[in-house]
Image 1 (cartoon, one colour):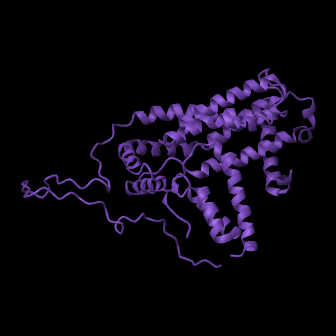
Image 2: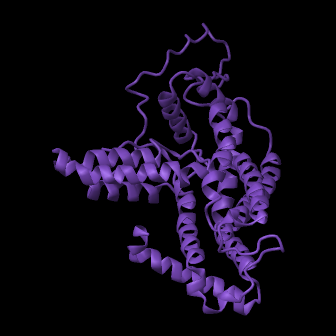
Image 3: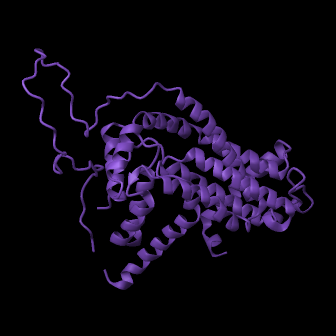
Length: 76
Length: 279
């Protein structure tokens, strides 16, 4: 990916970090998945760009509910 | 604020306004108590998730000794430690208590309340003369928290309640992480001090709910039977309990080597299809 096409993804990563230092810091949770949801989001955004990365991260968040079993689930 | 241009946010705010208005005009609560009531309702909606969490905590407690062992084994490799723990969860069908979605569901409520309080005077035309105080020590919930001495009391309660709720919600046994979560409110209080007092009130309420929930949960969890000591996991070799019949063993079974990597690959979540990267 060229630097220009990577830019939107970096914006998304910035937003994830914003979440991490603000709201995420408030709640002591360790995600049931590995890597954690926010880490997954960063990796997905890095690998697949803003649109697909966001979709992947969103789907992961939905999967990270009390009825799922969690586990090792890396970005593909 | 730039974020306010996003239409979803103004809709969230409008929903919050209606909810607060309902409590105020139908139940005759003051605005401050309406916020408390809204918080309680939100947390009540989340109760089914909590019940689910209690079950998870029970199973976690049952397997605590083995999990500690894993943590000890991979003390210096956090990544590996996490992976092994996750694997252990799956093998023993444990559902880790913590999940991201319930946390995230509270985010829209928080944002909605933030904007509602920010635009309080314009949103509620009557609000200019309305009683915005809380328990006689907060003169106005839409003012900044530090605008009045009462706000500092509220902030103190916030720190205390946040620490208590962190204590009850913590699922990690990692010491550094635990300490970090206990210190976090002290750092956070400086950011929160700039928020409207009503928002801090929301936070205090939700924290106190968590603490109460935690107390009940703990009582329930500690009532569960003591953990079975000889629970099998992938790391404890199967015991020959004489089921082969003759009872006499010719030789002790060789110590089982560490499971090979090919056998023990972390199970991954199944996907419908594997797609290659487009770019």
